[in-house]
Length: 527
Ligand SMILES: NC(=O)c1ccc[n+]([C@@H]2O[C@H](COP(=O)([O-])OP(=O)(O)OC[C@H]3O[C@@H](n4cnc5c(N)ncnc54)[C@H](O)[C@@H]3O)[C@@H](O)[C@H]2O)c1
Ligand SMILES: O=C(O)[C@H](O)COP(=O)(O)O
Image (cartoon, rainbow, N blue to C red; front, side, top):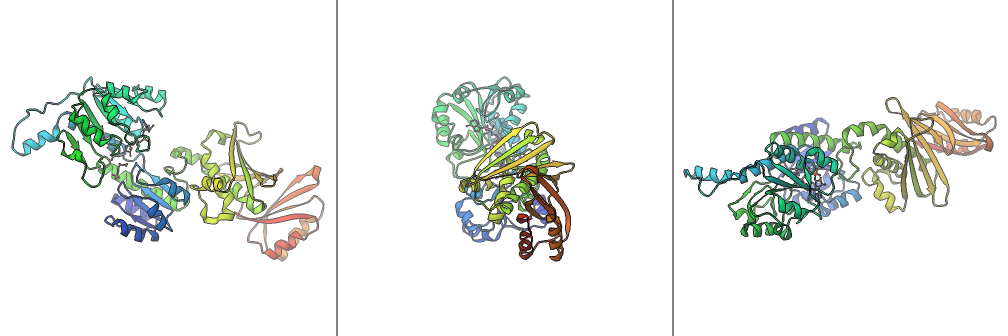
């Protein structure tokens, strides 16, 4: 596991990577060209907000499997290119939110009380408060745009200062607003017209980039204080400068600037604009959290495990990931059986979740099934990240259904594959105890199979002597049978036998088995 760290992360994170057996190169002052020249040697890249992870880089990154964002925002990482290539992108969304919320509040105090300006005067030995009267927070209204993790932390903290909190976030439920004691504004302009302080906490997306512009400032209350500790450009810098000149905005506190990390923004020339160099996450605590978390995630992703904060995968809370782990294994096992038992190209995949599993977030289990399904034909080109994209690109329609009851089982997952000529294949499985797996049905034959690394699965006419001959031939081929199960369809006089064996089975032995009278077909399955 070779990991390149292209921006500084905490020593604790680096130690974690090495303890887990990774070879770590910390190269934080590479030029872009140098980065492109070396990236081909690495399995994982760890970045913060300055490294642009885009198509140029992916094209040179033949071994890259994971991009770890030591932090929250992933706007410097091109997601589509990563997903297409099966590169997993992980971040640490919770690890620095308190620090970012605290800097937001710090900037708010600093701007509202002119702390940096007063500090600068005094450092120049000038004892003078003139012209720098501040604004008290009590009773003022703060308008929060984006009531997610950081927006909510800011809201709860500012409440203790006796402020009225209003927010605009069309993607957050009414109950969340209610629980936080925040008044919902359905229109951004309405929020602008009512707030004394505006603070933005959305991600940078196509929708949010420039969302606070000339029009919004026109609607604003005169004398507004503006804080941006989220991403440069969510508040358009030109429009902000114009609003300052027109006395609509009285003061601003900005942590993120267009053109960063270069200090080129014209906002730097305004005395009533207080700035910090993207320092929201720059605390000892946040950086330790971020470093350790990203290291753990990168290692898990390199080991092929499901990672809670994978950005280009359905997100799962950590507690739910534990509950779902056994189902991921079961799903992948069910999927892996198809191309080892059938040879027909897949047209449609139907996944049915019944019983307890139906109450969980199953989209990742579906990814595990698709990963397993295509693995025998695509090998390592398929993983959790690109399983959906690959299914789509191969014209495979995937559907999921759920039912709360599973008849005799607590949980049942059924995979139904329809091939291009309309032939249907089904396989069902369940779990019990501490993640034990059982395959309980294959094509209508009922079983209770503990899936093992090597299995022989044969269909035969249900008549005496077939099983005995199979045993004899396997003995001749020096293949030891560990367990055997039979599923029968009495009306059709057919049976399916599943033999768990201790070793690989040679092509010759399989051919002999296929020649036994009554055997309809025989397959070797490797899990
Ligand atoms: N300055 C720093 O050092 C620093 C540190 C951490 C995070 N950040 C940035 O802070 C921002 C917020 O982070 P977070 O963890 O709270 O994110 P989050 O995903 O928890 O919350 C973002 C919120 O924005 C809302 N939103 C999205 N589009 C919107 C729109 N068009 N209008 C209104 N609301 C919209 C979402 O519904 C969500 O509730 C991000 O941009 C992140 O990159 C900056
Ligand atoms: O999105 C984040 O986590 C913050 O903006 C911090 O970015 P940084 O890791 O470059 O400090």
